[in-house]
Image: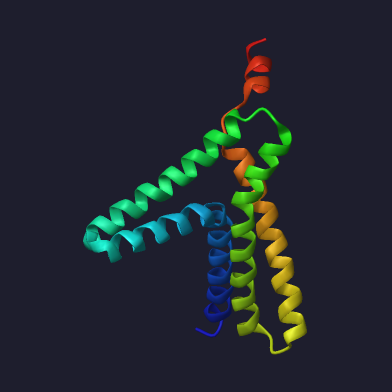
Length: 146
């Protein structure tokens, strides 16, 4: 059992880091869905109605971002759209890494350093994943047909 303990801890930390990087892309749609769902619940929609409205709001937020990113021709506006979606992911990455660092080390300086490194890593990963989720644009489609 003493051999499996550290291996399971490493596997658990690896799993949660993978989950953090995978779900960071959806931080803004999740927040929008949670906010709208909570609003619907507090206005009398009940648990089921609030959940359904929240899921629809999250899906619409994600879909609008993907459509806007795919069809906007200007690079500066595409960059703004990506930053709107990646900024909440970066903040979520900071706080998730900070929580893990607080459990692992007592020094607040090192906690802050690891938290900032984690935020940058999650932010870059979210940027790459957001730009990779969109279908090929006009230029890529034209090149693919030629």
